[in-house]
Image 1 (cartoon, helix red, strand yellow):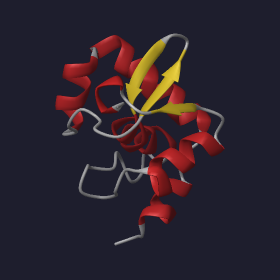
Image 2: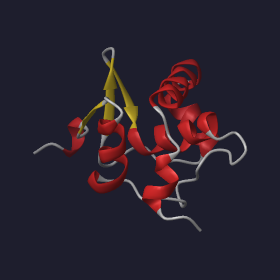
Image 3: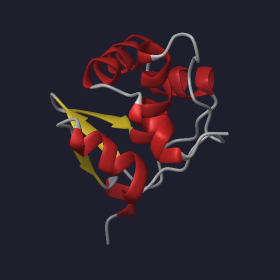
Length: 103
């Protein structure tokens, strides 16, 4: 298996935006269920006044950027500041902690 950081290297801002579009079309619950992700416990991506589950977004963006490999599952990589948060911020996205996780 590839390491987290290597798997996330394939993800582009375009892939993330396409995943956001699918998320918007399906709605949160259906999107998360379709791809086997739980709601984010750590980080949300903020874009145009909407919030997106960061790990699920990365997993699905991978399918858009690498259709030959498909989406990453929740078990394929870990979320968190060193992986998903860092990658999404490097692509120019705003990543915040969910309100439920704030003090």
